[in-house]
Amino acid sequence: MYRTSGEEQHPIVLYEYQPDRRAKHPAEFLKGFRGYLHADGYNGYHNLPEGIIV
Image 1 (spheres, rainbow, N blue to C red):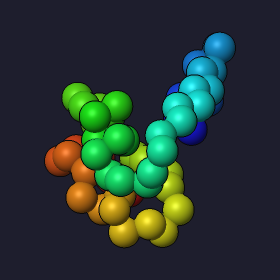
Image 2 (image 1 turned 30 degrees about the vertical axis):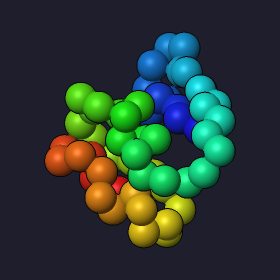
Image 3 (image 1 turned 90 degrees about the vertical axis):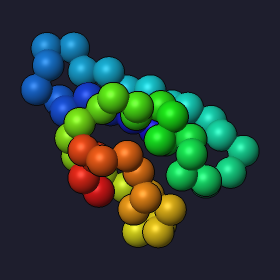
Protein backbone atom coordinates (compact mmCIF):
# COMPACT_ATOMS: atom_id res chain seq x y z
CA MET A 1 0.00 0.00 0.00
CA TYR A 2 1.29 3.44 -0.90
CA ARG A 3 0.00 6.76 0.42
CA THR A 4 0.93 10.35 -0.25
CA SER A 5 2.28 12.37 2.65
CA GLY A 6 -1.14 13.68 3.65
CA GLU A 7 -0.21 17.31 3.18
CA GLU A 8 -2.09 17.42 -0.12
CA GLN A 9 -5.69 18.58 -0.29
CA HIS A 10 -6.67 15.20 -1.77
CA PRO A 11 -4.30 12.49 -0.49
CA ILE A 12 -3.92 9.33 -2.55
CA VAL A 13 -3.95 5.77 -1.20
CA LEU A 14 -2.97 3.00 -3.63
CA TYR A 15 -3.14 -0.72 -2.92
CA GLU A 16 -0.89 -2.73 -5.22
CA TYR A 17 -1.08 -6.53 -4.92
CA GLN A 18 2.04 -8.60 -5.54
CA PRO A 19 2.29 -12.38 -5.07
CA ASP A 20 5.40 -12.09 -2.86
CA ARG A 21 7.38 -9.59 -0.77
CA ARG A 22 10.45 -9.32 -2.97
CA ALA A 23 12.04 -5.89 -2.95
CA LYS A 24 11.92 -5.70 -6.76
CA HIS A 25 8.21 -4.79 -6.63
CA PRO A 26 8.50 -1.58 -4.60
CA ALA A 27 11.80 -0.80 -6.35
CA GLU A 28 10.02 -0.85 -9.73
CA PHE A 29 7.03 1.13 -8.47
CA LEU A 30 9.18 3.73 -6.70
CA LYS A 31 11.68 4.20 -9.55
CA GLY A 32 12.58 7.90 -9.59
CA PHE A 33 11.05 8.53 -6.16
CA ARG A 34 13.11 10.39 -3.58
CA GLY A 35 11.99 10.47 0.03
CA TYR A 36 10.90 8.35 2.96
CA LEU A 37 9.30 4.93 2.80
CA HIS A 38 7.54 3.83 5.96
CA ALA A 39 7.63 0.03 6.02
CA ASP A 40 7.70 -2.90 8.40
CA GLY A 41 11.08 -4.33 9.40
CA TYR A 42 11.38 -6.64 6.39
CA ASN A 43 15.05 -6.68 5.37
CA GLY A 44 14.27 -6.71 1.63
CA TYR A 45 13.25 -3.05 1.77
CA HIS A 46 16.75 -2.00 2.79
CA ASN A 47 18.09 -2.60 -0.73
CA LEU A 48 15.87 -0.12 -2.57
CA PRO A 49 17.29 2.46 -5.00
CA GLU A 50 19.37 5.34 -3.69
CA GLY A 51 17.29 8.27 -2.51
CA ILE A 52 14.68 6.15 -0.74
CA ILE A 53 15.07 6.27 3.02
CA VAL A 54 13.44 3.40 4.92
